[in-house]
Length: 245
Image 1 (cartoon, rainbow, N blue to C red):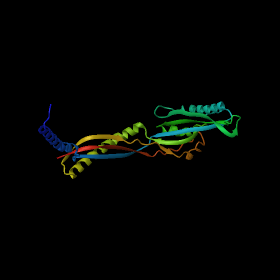
Image 2: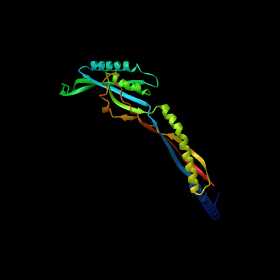
Image 3: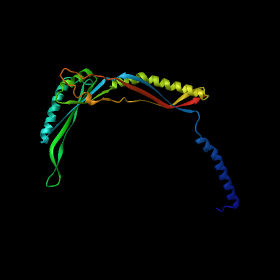
Image 4: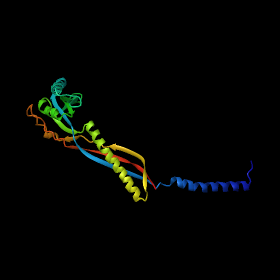
């Protein structure tokens, strides 16, 4: 097909007119909305920590790796035998682990120029945790083969979920109150809830200084003093609302 100069000129005019027509539409599509408000609100409560965690440990060293390992195993077995007397699912739970033995090197050199092993040392741990704080605290005096490495206080899942259930309505109410107030201040009469997310902060385990407890096990009847304190549970609500007239 042969295009005349008039046809080409008409095509350029139509293309230009189309481009002009598309500009306002694109501008309208990219223009930010002025009726959407991003919001966040939270509510907090404090609840007593109801979870006690004791981490016991000990170390051994010697010339023979097998002997060191056997000593560690005997120490752990004796501690487990005592801890199992009070073990109860959810109340007193036990977790043994981290039994490790590794070589100790001296300054001398062998004929192969490799560092010489002068002995062996190792460590073992036992973790005891649960909500029966009284039974767990008494293990500090009854377990004689391991010593307390650290103490932690936390919040059980049951206590945390109950606290979240108690405070979530407060967080949502605070979110709605903010939406109503801000919408009115922007000149709107009402609002409509848009996308919203609700989440809760996870309370961290509070660790106590280990040196405070290392010399506590004076007798089998002496219990570790328990000072659990309180944990903070926070529920956060965030999202956006559409303000309406």
